[in-house]
Image (cartoon, rainbow, N blue to C red; front, side, top):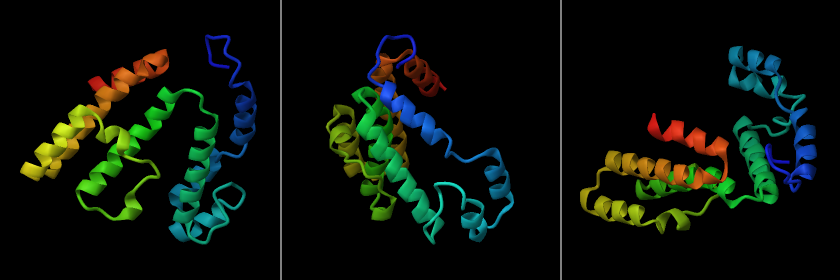
Amino acid sequence: MISGTNDTRYAFVNGIIRVREAKLLKKSHFERLIDAELSSFNVILSDSPYTCDVDFFNTLARVEREERNFFNEYCLHIEARRCLDWPDAIHNLKVKLKHGPEDLLYPVPTNEVESWEEVREILEEHIREKNNFLLSTRLDQILCQKLYENAGFSAFFKRFYELFYYL
């Protein structure tokens, strides 16, 4: 249930999340990881969901995909999804415009953010100017503004992005 409401649509998911919380990394994991070499990570994480792949970075990518799929399946608020998707979409757009490698891309399409009028103007300017710093800065500004406008669905998100946007 969403705090402050009588909305029970998340009651089932709340139970699933509580069970999953038990599998999160403990403080002792972090303390051991801080002092360890990358080659030791699998041993340290052997009793957590972050193990099983030979390559630690593949494991992180797998867990990130699983968590994103869980979120997308159970999140009922499109506004909350936007808070997760828009930053990744802006990142993808920057990577594409700067001709970065495809392995830097998140599994999020850029169609929605490319349709924003402000972004189209920046893209037109980037074609003329070819200034990557200005491109990144302006896209980040638009992202902050859009996230703040989107955050009206929740007092928590509104305050979070108010701090984020005005800092």
